[in-house]
Amino acid sequence: MKPLHVLLIPFFCFVFAAAVSAQQTDSSHRIIADSVISDTSAKNNLPDTLFIAGISIYGNKKTKSYIIERELPFQQGSYVALADLKKELETGRQQLVNTTLFTDVAVYVENSYGQFVFITVFVKERWYILPLPYFKFIDANFNTWWVAYNHTLKRTNYGIKFLHNNVSGRNDKLTTWLITGYSKQVAVKYERPFFDKQLKQGYQFFAGYSNQGDINYSTDKSKQQFLRPEDRSYMRKTLKVEGNYIYRPGLRVRHIVKAGYMYEQIADTVFALNPNYFGNGKTRASFPYIGYTFRYSNADYNFYPTKGLISETSILHKGVTKDMNLTQLTSINTYTIPVLSKTQIQFKEGGVLNLPFNQPFYNKGMFGYYGNIFMRGYEYYVIDGDAGIAGRATLQQQLLSFTKKLGLGAKKEDYSFRVYGKLFADAGYVYNQHPGSSILNNKMLHSWGVGIDFVAPYDVIFKFDYSFNQLGESGIFIHLNTDF
Image (cartoon, rainbow, N blue to C red):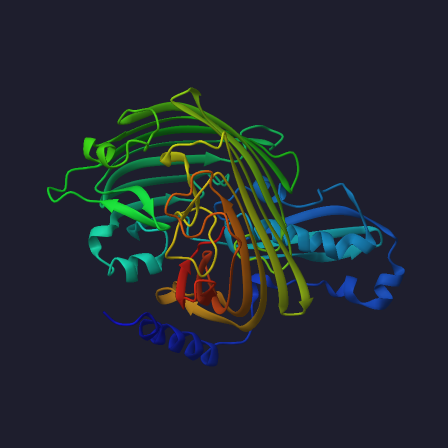
């Protein structure tokens, strides 16, 4: 097996070769300023309050104009203070970038006549239909799959994932999965952000079924224990149906109410190894669940913010009987502060509380599981528990910003790339009423390191970290589009 750092050499060669040959610009994060407004003498002749006399939108071949206008902090016929105009234009651009509908956005003043200003919005739409081959390891992160399990294909899922990210031009998204390999999955998800005339209410629906080939049946010394039978029979069956109601009264805030049903069944051999898997003395669990999420977003780019605040707090309750009774509180917040023009410091915290404390293994996963909170430097571990909190501090500096023409023939277009260097430190604590053999519970944990992040088009983000933890371990860790 090749060492992990050897595999990274071609990637870094590509990054620096592209940087040398490309123009040093970043079109996806530019602000187009109008000469009439930026000219000092013209500003002096403008009134303190401006009237938005018109809004023109260009480039939206598929997306409905009112979906674009919904993201602007002003409307045609509204008044904007001259002192706030630049900030309002930038807010509109950021909101449109974060819809994930466009590869490039510009919002600027086209003309002004006394008190009257005319706004232009230019967008460049993404490819919305993406039938993609699907390949994904099932472990918590790339390193666990590559190193701990020798990157075996037996621990991967593969198949087809079909995405239509703007079905009707209303920013509605349809995703279907047809997956085989480690598990056999069939799933469909549809989201429509607005269905009312006021553009404040939306919904999402998900339904999926899977058969899983092996199963994480317990944790020993903070590492997952898996069972995979030689006859390749399936160890776990899952059926999930969920519906969400989304209420978005303004630009920044979303309220999400969810309700769903879950059915889980494990093989008898799993129950024999861990009778507390579901905690009900059975090999199956069937329960409804309900939840509420409050989401606030005021950042320049949600997938990799360089300024602003992103906050999400949720409460989830599973079950209505003693066989399944969990109330889970989760809060994750990211605050990014610019300190120089291309340098930011980011603070991030996440916390989880499970009530009551005495939960079965099925509800115990706290840190390190796929899609959950994790601490950098502890990628090879998972931490079960009843309550946990983790915090991060990251100093990030943009090293490169360039554009490359990608595509076929005459359809080549400019796409923006950015490369960041970073220093970071993490700290966390997970309480477990019954820690068992865990080596990470009920103690303060910390880690630190350096890294490089590569931000590519279509919200693809590669993170390469060299981390150190308090166990005396260190190494290179890779994350793709993953953060907590």
